[in-house]
Every structure is written in C-alpha cells, then in structure tokens.
Amino acid sequence: MISAAIITLNEESNIGDCIESVRALCDDIVVLDSGSSDRTREIAEEKGARVFTQSYLGDGPQKNRAVELAASDWVLSIDADERATPELCAQIRALDVTNAEPDAYRLRRKTYIGNRWIAHNGWYPDRIVRLFDRRKAAFTNRYGHARVEGGKVTDLDGDLLHYSFDDIAQLIYGQKFAIRDALAFYEQGKTSGPVKPVLHGIWGTFRSLVLRGGCLQGIDGFTVAMSSGLKSYMKYAILNEMHRDPEALASYRKKYGRLIGEKK
Image 1 (tube, one colour):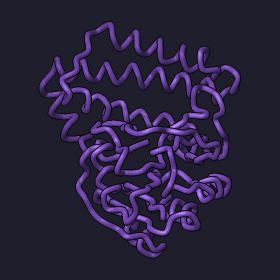
Image 2 (cartoon, rainbow, N blue to C red):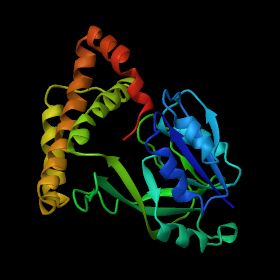
Image 3 (cartoon, rainbow, N blue to C red):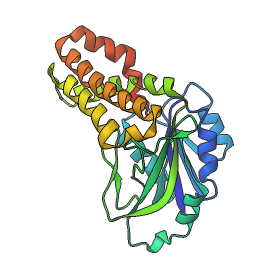
Image 4 (cartoon, helix red, strand yellow):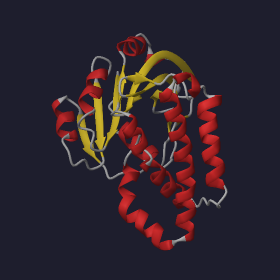
C-alpha cells in the first residue's frame, strides 16, 4: 500500500485535481492543512482524503508531519499544484515496494506557466525524491524548500506535472517568495552585504538563460531567467535591509510572515 501526503494552504483551486491524480495509485490520502481560509479542507474531505490541521512548521517539518500521519510506510509526497501522470502512476504500481531494494525513488517534474511547459532554464527534468520509505528517508528539517534524504535512491522515468504559475504575471508575483526566503535566512543567522545582491542577481540570470538553456525557450525562457535573477537579487537585498534596519525587519515580519506558510 502507498499513501499520498499533501500539505496545503488555500489550495481550493488545486487540491481536487491533485487528489484525483493519485486516487488510482494511493489507498490512503493525507492532507495536512496549515489554516486555509478557503474551501481546501472541505474539498479534500469530499474527495475522500483524511484531513488534519497543523500550524505551519516550515516546509520540511510540515511535510514530515504529513508523512507521519500516513497509514503506509511507503509515501508519495505531492504538492497541491502537482499532478501525477497516468504513466507515472502505472510505473509506480508496477513496483514491488514491500520488497524493493531502493528506499526512495526520484521522479521527473515538468513545470508549466499556464499550459506552456518550460523545458529549459533548468526546470526539466528537475528530478526530486518524492516516493520513499519513511523508515529509511525523510525530508530535511529546512524551513524553506526541503528535500528528501536518506536511503538508496533510484530514478523513475514518470513525470509529475507542476502547475506552479497560471501566467507570467503570477511568475513575477512569485517574487514575494524572495521575502519568505530572506526571512528564513535571517532566522538562520545569515547575512548579506551590499555587493552580494548584485552578484547573485547577475549570476541567477546568466545561469538560467545561458548555462541552463533558457535562451532556447523563447520569450518564456528569457522571462524565467530575468525572474530568477530578480528573485536572487531581491532575496539578498531584503536580507541586507533586515540587518540594517530593525524597523524594516519588524515590518516584514508583520506584513509578510504569513508567506512562510506558502510555497511555490
């Protein structure tokens, strides 16, 4: 048996399709919500998921808590804006996980802006470990984006579809996550001088556009590259501001502390 574990916050537009994509694969579906103000929890319950509530602990701790609530030791951790393809589900169903030599499986992820798949900019195959034996592997204890570590890992060829952005405007709006990352960095004791934002911004754009082939993606590739550079710049510029100006730090915490409960 395989369980699905999903963490949510205001995902009413996504959670139903996410659950449907894994229904044929997972006998048990856990949704751990961090205080949605929309119908996320109601929709998840209507779709047959077991729904729990937990104040946001950070990406890694929150996902590990969802995994703990699963009925099976083998867990597929999937985000609400992701969909498991039928091909991926078939490939996983063919596995004998109870006698599997690997302790975890790494999946490919296809990220979209609207209905446009971004095949370059380092966005594909974007391999991530999402199917694993919780007795052997777990998410790192990171407040920001966490990854699964532990055990022997094998790659699968199936794809997760990642509908992260509805359009380019939402991609740019995603710059708010620079604030979230800066807050997390501050709490971790990290610092930033005046030069670091500039260097990170230039490097982020160059890496996405040139080294990761964004120039082959057309205007979307250029947009993603510019957005990547801007996010890198803003993350360290905001971190610098937090250390220079206690009033700015207090303002960020008051206005944007809720972002720490959100994810891309």
